[in-house]
Image (cartoon, rainbow, N blue to C red; front, side, top):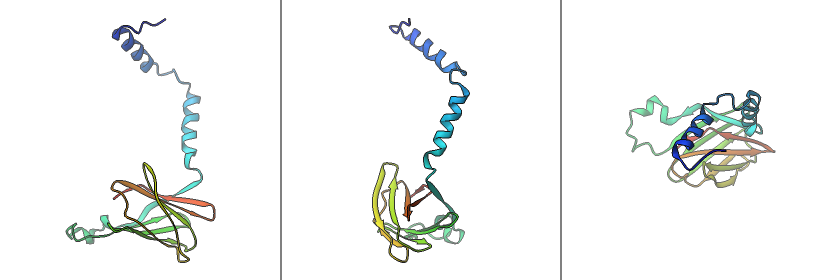
Length: 150
């Protein structure tokens, strides 16, 4: 039986619990890592691989106040998402074109949702400051972008 009426006893028990490296069986740790890896198995990640205007060396010489839009291109195996982010909102196009549901997400959750037109184009309102990502669902398949800060 532990005596929790003393800070010394409590700190000693905490120290013992933290230093017992073999307290969790390795199989449990591996199962936890495997379960965590499967949390987004149904979502392909669109990676920011093609272009980010904020990293464009040709635009770097301009004053930031002059740059009013940020262009981004996200790519996956069969999908590309081209996006322009401004203070007025987000304009984008999903390639190949077609009907899709596009959701603007922040770490707090969904902010806004829209549907693409027949050309794969969409418009969303201005994103809140901080991290955001876009999730697109086409014919039951979902893809989402990397997190970006705006």
